[in-house]
Amino acid sequence: MSALAGRTALVTGGASGIGAACARALAEQGVEVTVADIDGPGAAAVSREIGGKPWTLDLLDVEELETLRLDADILVNNAGIQSIDEIAAFPPEKFRSMLALMVEAPFLLIRAALPHMYRNEFGRVVNISSIHGLRASPFKVAYVTAKHALEGLSKVTALEGGPHGVTSNCINPGYVRTPLVTKQIADQARTHGIPEDQVISEILLKESAVKRLVEPDEVGSLVTWLASPAAGMVTGASYTMDGGWSAR
Image (cartoon, rainbow, N blue to C red; front, side, top):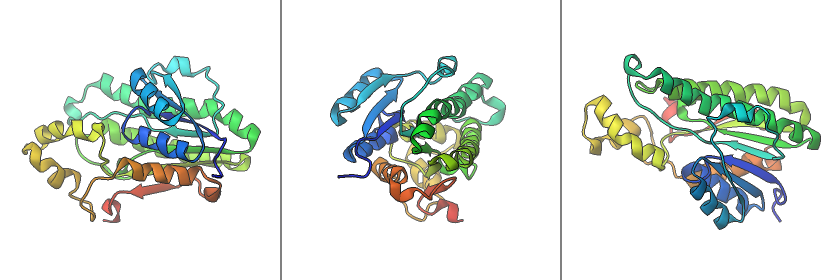
């Protein structure tokens, strides 16, 4: 029996991509997973597949999150979006909403989950950051800013949670084979002035030593390890899964 059997988890953005892969990986270890997503039908479909619970959740409704209390042993902050444009043309309202989704909402969910984790002297916070939490790229001002802020939030959570058996870590993938990446290819082609068929090789994988996209299941496997008792001394860390991008 898995050491995680009987634990509970909340995965945001769990209806597809990395979130769905994390939900599946945790469920395979016997974790009862709540799949949260603004896409209610998508969350319900993944929940049926893994025997979990769906939760239709709009993380931009931050005021509703302020009074939330979560009885989750494992929290995976995964939900995110991307928008590509130069700073001078970047819509301020888009900048604010992206920071709300990828920084303020994770803060409020961590805040809601910590009392339960502290009572049980066990908790795992896994924040799906990005290589852009450690490195910058042009035309991604809101995303890079949000992911850098998420790194700080994760480290403070690690320092406060450590005495209570709670760990907090970031996973920093490069480009992952998800709808989020697929949707930005046209925008990348536009902003860089190149054909779409050159975006993957000349932009997405340019800095990687391993010339392929990260698979969502690879991220899910790291989430399950970070959630396990074997990773009890791993906290405040940022785990790159970037094919060597950050080695430069």
